[in-house]
Length: 119
Image 1 (tube, rainbow, N blue to C red):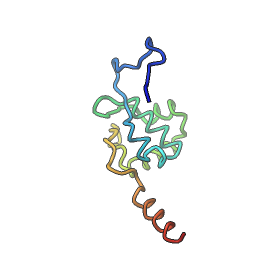
Image 2 (image 1 turned 120 degrees about the vertical axis):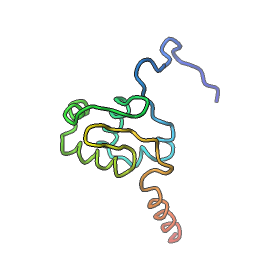
Image 3 (image 1 turned 180 degrees about the horizontal axis):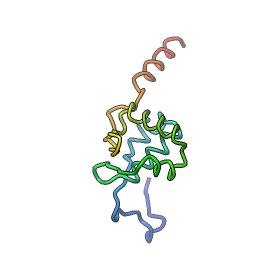
Image 4 (image 1 turned 30 degrees about the vertical axis):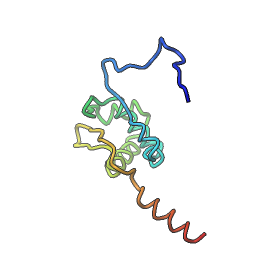
């Protein structure tokens, strides 16, 4: 497919801040394994982080920006940590390089194999 820029005056560029999500996040199943709350928090942390993935926003500020209640935010944060997508030391967040496989990929693969054997 030949691609062409639709609006050459508005091509995205990295100016000042630094944010990106690798295409692998979508195409290799990371996006699909997150709840809406986890997606919201992860997106915020990506947007708020520097080139090392570090973000210093407080819990209160994150809840205000994302619209998540503190309890929901805490659950989403803990799930993202468990899924090996972020680190948090109680003060600073780090968005991590994506792991080799999305969280739960091995379990899903085994389930698909089991279902395939039954068909």
